[in-house]
Length: 205
Image (cartoon, rainbow, N blue to C red):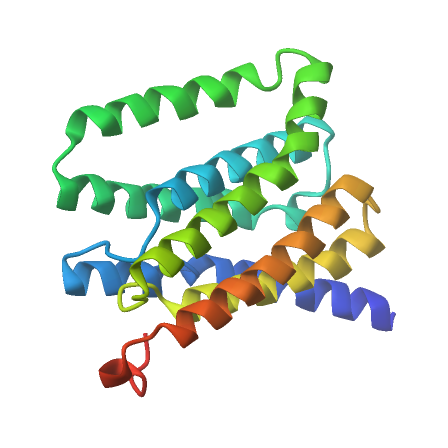
């Protein structure tokens, strides 16, 4: 009974956090009218990882509460990508991204081997998105347009998903992914705070 209560809480709180997870980052970029310090490569890799993860969960008919937040996260990442395109004035590039992601969504489930292989690579893809963001921060030494709140919430949601995965599907690939993502999210959050400009250190994202 206690485990069921914790499971419902973890699922519900994860969904609530993910409904607004990217908004602090979106608002920071809109306010600054700049994407400095925010990695486009990280965003594209994250979107790829999210799409693969959702398709994998849907393909094997896993309980929707264990992945319901991912379509919401995909929508928010698309909004952030549109801001990148808007502030960098590259509409053609945006159309290419749209075609690639829509195509990938349909291709992934053509064959069981494809979706299984994609999920095997999903952890590396998602980890690559975190390292791309870290590399961007290390290069710019400026996290003024990167939201620490967004990364903190991402850390919590991944931690909650470790628990929900253990008590529901027990899928080892999914569990490993969330453990790795939690550790890397903590690293990115710490890096964002380290490179935060002193003038805005006391301000909230």
